[in-house]
Amino acid sequence: MPKVYFVIPCYNEEEVLPETIKRLSLKLMSLIKDGKANEDSRMIFVDDGSKDKTWSIISAYSKENQFVGGVKLAHNRGHQNALLSGLMTAREENCDCVISLDADLQDDIDVIDQFIDKYLEGCEVVYGVRSSRKKDTVFKRTTAQGYYKFMKMLGVDIVYNHADYRLMGSKALDGLSEYKEVNLFLRGIVPLIGYRSDYVYYERSERFAGESKYPLKKMIKFAVDGITSFSVKPLKIISNIGFFICLLSIIGFIYALVSFCMGSAVTGWASTICSIWFLGGLQMLCIGIVGTYVGKIYNEVKQRPRYRIEEKIINKAKESEKKE
Ligand code: UDP
Ligand code: MG
Image (cartoon, rainbow, N blue to C red; front, side, top):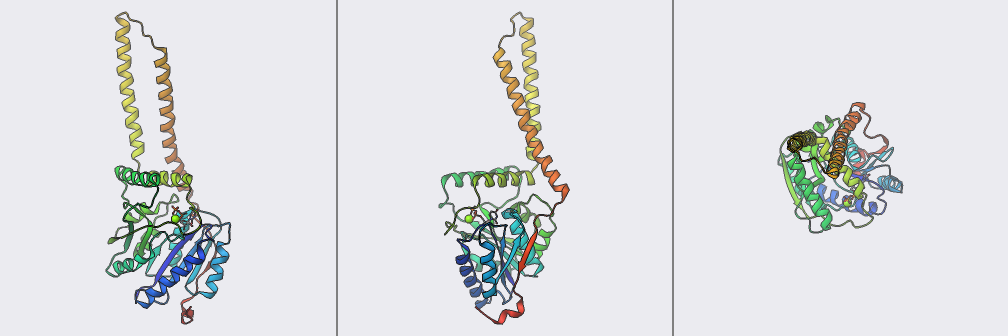
């Protein structure tokens, strides 16, 4: 029987945590009963520098519920880093496989059984894929799906409609630990690790309490990060645009010269100014894109730590006789 770990990043989740802990504990106990997980299985709640009572809730529950463990990050490092710290903690605890999920349980936890079945069949990575996006707002649905298509176009291998709800085996975790990048985009990295993988389909529901911790600004940053961390195509597109515009301006110049020789004066002050502005803007945009990559290189070469753990609670396996 595998030692299964759940990893749940939490940022200001006091409203959902008690219910989430209850539901996940029941799930874990039923997995143990069904012989799909052993008694040493645990849940790790990562407190991503929350400002509310998230950590005190986690530590209080860990005292009465042996399955509950926690990691407290010293400051808010964002969902991806929080998730990574939890995954790496699970790896240090020598788990056989780990399932990552959100604290709001929007992802259907009943498919966890299928995750483990696939793992037992020999898959190292199992991706949770949303079967539909009916419950999303029109805005979220179109932007999200457009984004996946755009990423594919740029040559980035990501799983369509898969967020960070997935199972990873210990070999995949070892693989992940070798990726040292600071600009984390886990859904781009995991397919690069390799090994046998499979998909499990599920329906995503609404948050049962609290509000989204991913406002539009964070979402846009995340999307841009995904693109610039995995594809250098935007750089190529810039040079192509530059080349094309140069070509156009040469043709324009020749045209102006010919018409000047034929006696008709080159008029059109407005069009000249317009094109200067256009080119100036375009150049600034292109420099901005190049700058984004340079900025990333800057961040990567510094190799700063991606998170810092302030406190850690894992109930040891020996105590596992006292059941809840
Ligand atoms: N989260 C986090 N750090 C952050 C923002 C979010 O750990 O800085 C966690 C959050 O607690 C939740 C998960 O990331 O467990 C997904 O966030 P949320 O459900 O708010 O995003 P949405 O489902 O609205 O996209
Ligand atoms: Mg959510």
